[in-house]
Amino acid sequence: MAALWFIIILVIAIVLAFKNGPTFALCFFGTTAIPCVAVAGAKWGLVAGDAQQKIGVPVIALILLAFAFWLSTYVSVTAFGIEISGLVLMAIGGVIGLAGVPLAWGGQAPQRN
Image 1 (cartoon, rainbow, N blue to C red):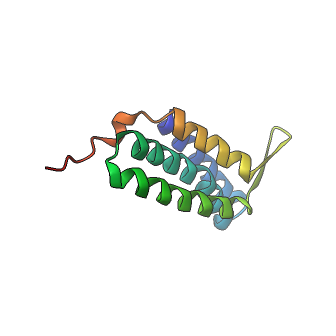
Image 2 (cartoon, helix red, strand yellow):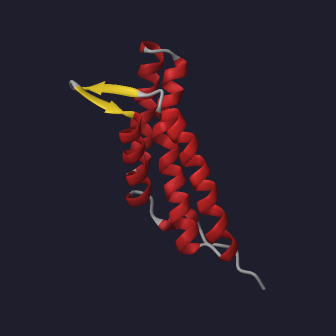
């Protein structure tokens, strides 16, 4: 599901690069892709990570989400006559990162001896 999401937003970003300019397209891509990766990473860090990763990974995820929120202030897309704000796009990316990325994609946390 997440792979399909990335293909969809990449195609939309390419179209937006020609229609609205490359800066808007990069903001759109960052607003939609970063939350997916950050939430999926935080999920893996909290569930499968060791003690250091249970603290560090969510902190990095919050920093990435703050950056994506800043990017989302520059994004507003109209689809089929409906205005979609950057915050809604962030939420959609976060839900896809939470539900659409299996824990197996993260691999196993290294075991300490």
